[in-house]
Length: 367
Image (cartoon, rainbow, N blue to C red; front, side, top):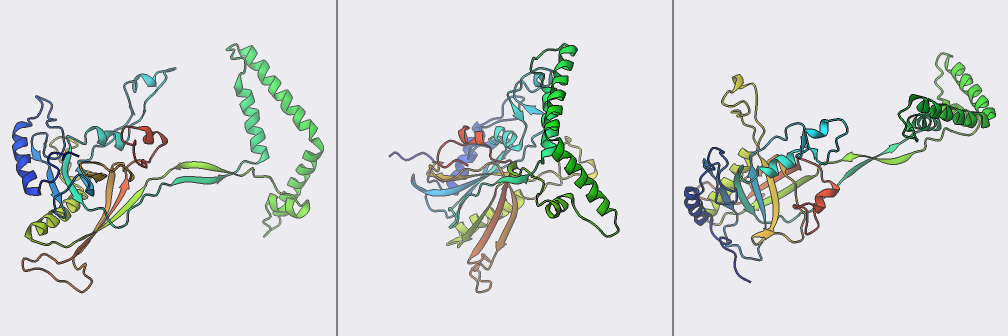
């Protein structure tokens, strides 16, 4: 198996390569979107993409590690995505796109807006937890009857736009409903009497008897709730990672320092905003922090088995500088001997069924 180029280079070697490539990767004329965004390229020709790695050992084609890409956040905007977004608002138009979201906007511009690459060992505990929200749903017989009746009134099975035809079909629905009620007339009369009796009881001060409780006591029945477990919506996934740093030399100590600093700075909001051009509007607004593209890697390719991530926001960065548990101990230059760092991420968008068949979800276990 041949060795991929740039796979085992040190951070210093990468920095030198970045500087050379920055001179050749010029921004597109008038577009301000120069470079293609991978490690070693420039962002819009203005700043270099920073790259850090711990430990600094040379990577091989079989090395498994985690790569975290820091990307300047692109807001999703409003409206719909896709070429037919505007036309889909017209009456009778068929829309084949979807609503704009952060995953789409950040993936489109992740290359040109990449700020840093950080390579870390895969933590001791990794996993994924996909959650779908389901809740109990109820609809009693009265509600079901009313819903079915309205549906039949609105169905217009003939498809005719003639008001007379529509009226005729509505009268038919009313007749069918009346026949159904007539067939249960006796029971409905008794039910009505129970309802009135229950209302009379609740008029007594201090009485608070539900209709269901009255039926249970009087006739030994309750209203059938027709309960079902119904889908309520997707959930956002959370991920937590813990790293232990034990710098073995000054070079690794500097890498660890820059890794921690980069994470803490990237998760912080900006007080200097660019949403309104150069205007800061008296400091009345804050700009969103950077977001993170996380990938498990094997050599220079995405890991063939482990789960994938959507773009994430970092919600917590906790660093302990006495990770040895025996109090604070440091080297002569002040670097702590053992440092632990815990990172917490939340994905910006839910995982959908179609994501597993997308360009970014194929392979391995998916998301």
